Length: 199
Image (cartoon, rainbow, N blue to C red; front, side):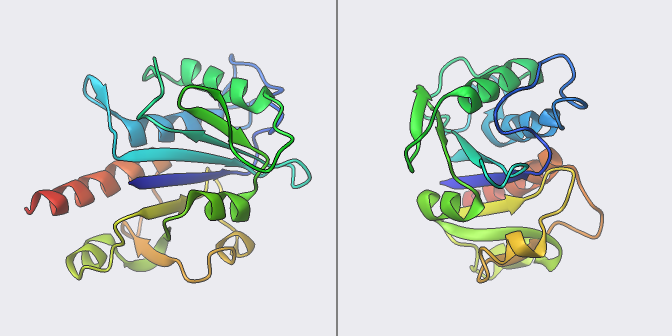
């Protein structure tokens, strides 16, 4: 199972934003929705070998993590507005207990920051870092774990404090150019899919 974790630094974690300005007043929810689509959608279906966790870190006193699991979610459409509506629904759901609570099938929320989310998700952290080792080299040498948890920021990079949450994470690079998150996810899928297919 591949897990893609995006840390959101600007989206209000209480879901107090509308659906008409996802790139502005909502704090760049549009980027998060594109990451969900890139991670989970392919032509005419959803991938079953990946999941997405969105960590909302704009308010350190009230963090939230939304988990999207394509194995059980229903009617996840490939457009930003409807995906944003599902994310907002999860954020508005009360979650007083320290575990993931299912809001609807395949959509869960927990009062987790990044450290707690990584602990609960399991797997092996892999930070997307422009200065890391090339992804292809990591895969070719057999050092890509079977259950990678890819960490990335939104329009802001992960801070050193956030990276310190997973100090032993592999750091892999997709090249010298700073990419959009959804493009990075597509490249990761491409490289790993080809490696699994033996080509």
